[in-house]
Image (tube, rainbow, N blue to C red; front, side):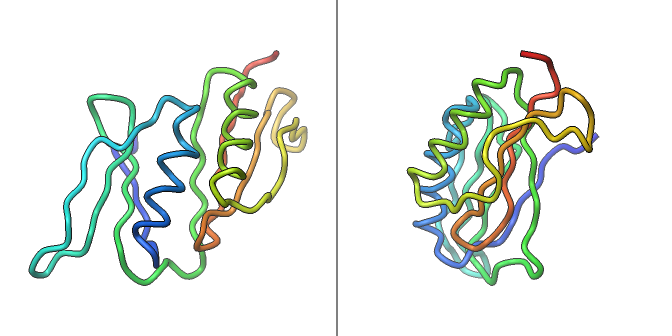
Length: 127
């Protein structure tokens, strides 16, 4: 089981704003933030209270870009994520819909974050 994951971002403030808005429909919020200090860049942790499980860190973005998928309970949350992420400056990388090549109820949407990371929200349940 994965406890947490993260990725490097080139513009910390821009990415923090993007993820704050894009992940809000999933029930995620900014839970922890550590400003840059000696030997440590800016770091922010997002999650469902009280635990942060998705982190961004200021630095050189991962190459190739990372793919992170957030599992959600409803298709409505997938749609809300996609809409919020686009409004926050994300680029469409696949609108909400069934991806039958994965399985009959794989309902997902994809956006590219400001650094080109492929961020997905997915629901595995029928409507």
